[in-house]
Each structure stands twice: as structure tokens, then as C-alpha cells.
Image (cartoon, rainbow, N blue to C red; front, side, top):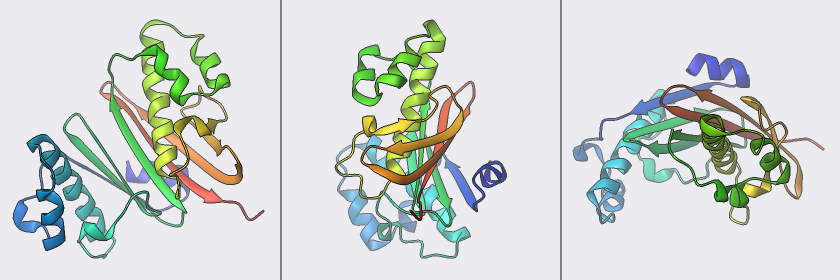
Length: 205
């Protein structure tokens, strides 16, 4: 997957998938404090899988393994959790990177009002049955990845990201009121679900 995403983006891309939790002994002091702040075992387990994936990428990039030095959104790293799997991504020479993964699941059609614009809703409305549900999930991962790839996204919602061609597995997107932000995304779809990787670069205009 690293090679495929690197060829697509023209950047150095590293991907790490983890189902194993990081041993507590490998946590830094600050990481252990963060871990102890969670109140449920499920959240602790999810977090440890994410730290495991992140630490692998940090090691490959010869950076400090203390993940508390990373905050999200981040210009070089992104992380997603779903269905017991953590996926971390690292990308060089971008202003932001995002990743999202969703297993196939039943959807609530009314949620399109929350994350799709009119053109995107119109295209989705031409589909039905399983195709509708899978494209709904895929578009959700696209919007989530685009959001994560955008720094200073506090005042943005998923609906603020406009996908140029909603049917495209790989394509371009823009952000409302930020016309010079250039975003690209690529989806990987299989029997398990939909994975999307996105990155942002600001134009020189």
C-alpha cells in the first residue's frame, strides 16, 4: 500500500495497520497519563492500537517515539480506528494529511444533510440498495479524510468540503471560503470496507 499511495501522491507515504495493543511498558510518562485518563477498557484498547501504529511510523522516520508530541490535525501524520483496527499514515511535503476507514454498515440516509452538499446528494440519490449504502460509507470516509487533512479545521464541518466528482474513487476537493487550498484524495475499497487517504497543499496563488 505504501508504494501505491506514493505513486498516486508523488510523495513519500508510509502506512501501518495494527490490531495489537502497545504494551504498557512501552508508554512514555506522558503517554501513560493520557492512557490513564480514559474511563473505559474499549477506549484504552483502541488508543493503544493507535499508539502502536504511530510508533512504528515514527521509528521508520527516525523521530521521537513519544506520541504525545503529535497533535491532530497534523501536517505529517494521521490516524483512524474502526472495528478493532488502527491505521496510521505518514506523508512528507504536504500541509496536512488525513486517513479514515469504515467497515461496511447500515446507514441512516437522513445523515446526508449533515455531510454532503447539494451536488453530492443529487448524485447519491441516483443510487439504491447496497450500492447506495456503500457509496454513502465511501463518501463519509472521503469527507473525514479531507477534514483531518486540513489544518485549523475547528470552524469547518464535513459539508464544507466539496468533492469535484462524487463518483470518483480518486479525485480533487476544495474547501468553502478557501479556494486556494488544494486537496486530493484516494479511496481503497474492498470486501471489508472503505479506506480513504487525503492530503492538502496550499497553492502559490
